[in-house]
Image (cartoon, rainbow, N blue to C red; front, top):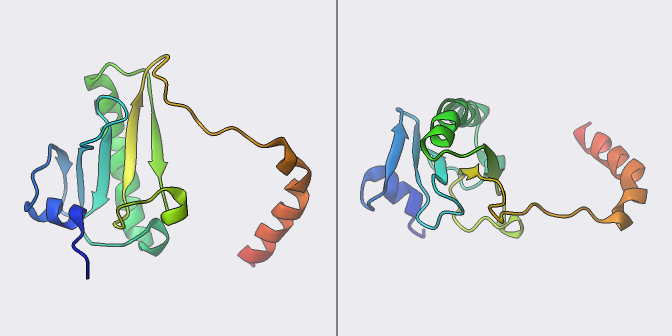
Length: 136
C-alpha cells in the first residue's frame, strides 16, 4: 500500500502548519496555496474519496468548515471563500485521502470557475431524468 501523505501529516511524520484540530479532524495550510490562507480539512481516519467516507465523517468536516472558514477569511482579510471537494482522479483529486479545500477569495484574484457549455443545455431534461432514476 502506498503511503498517504495526509495520514503522515496527521501522525506528525510530515511537518505542517496546523490551524485547527479535533479528535476526528485536522485542518492545515496547503503547501501550494491558491491564495493566502488556503486550508485543507481532512478526517483523521483514512477514506480514499468523499464517496467512501461515512456520513458522520462528512458531518465532522462540514462542522469544521463552518467553524474555521470565517476565521480564515478574517485572518487573511479575504472577502469570501470557496469550498472545493475533488472526488476521484478525473475530478483532479491527486491525494487519495478525502479532503476539502477552503480557498479564501479576493477581488480580482485570478482564480476562475469553470464555464458552462451551451451544447449541454438541451440535454438538461434527459440528464435530470437519468439522475432521478439513479436515485431510485
